[in-house]
Image (tube, rainbow, N blue to C red; front, side):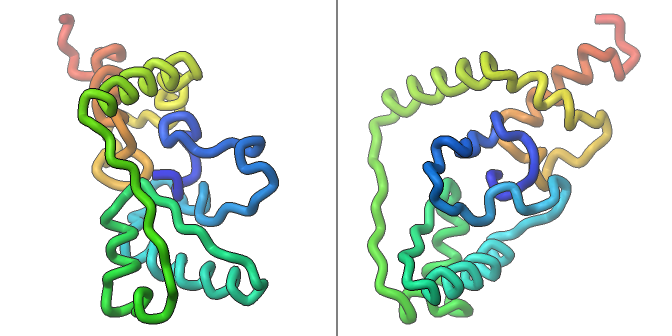
Length: 156
């Protein structure tokens, strides 16, 4: 979701100060309502990787969606694992620890303005199965916003 423009809080995008002057690619580059597939991610990533390598720098690919990374690395079209030496690092966390972290994360997002951020992109009849609207809990919040506006004409 971080590739899409908008929803900085919901997508937990890295801030400028957190970047510490390091150039990041694909963050906020894609229009919010675009259909952006794993193949699109691969096509853009391959271009960025090639450009980074030309500058004698070392590309680091970080992702939250394993399906996108898997398509890039294992997809036969891009030949990534045959072209590049690579190292993979992942974190294995107990479910209870992950659940506590997610609870804390949601609270932090709400306190940072998550609800107002979703209100800004809320369109009652928008397609919440594509683009940035697929972000974590946005569909659920859209249901709540519809209820607040009583869009169904129901008095409850």
